[in-house]
Image (tube, rainbow, N blue to C red):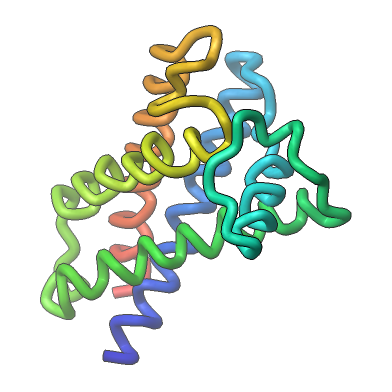
Length: 159
């Protein structure tokens, strides 16, 4: 069991790094705005008081270290997803990692963003309250596809 948790931790870190590299490419090549993890940090901070949903996270009380908290949360969630995949697929998958389970899991994980994080930030279900929800959804799906690829590639690298 501990071996799966360690492997899950590693693939979660690798996949989150892949997602962050993808974000850098989007910024440099396609001039997308850089990811800002401060609102996520503020949201996680407010979770400690039981507040999940906000009309606008920007109106919520700020936290001194919300950017750092956002980055920590980003990696903690990526690690948690990696561990969940490891526990779902078991040790046999790590002996010969295949793309499909990692790809499917990467796409499945977008649901937490669409149905928990984005409404929690005040962006609506699946970014419905943003100026261009379909663009946000497409970028979310692309990022989580990269996350799935990162899970698989990291599993290949550590086998």
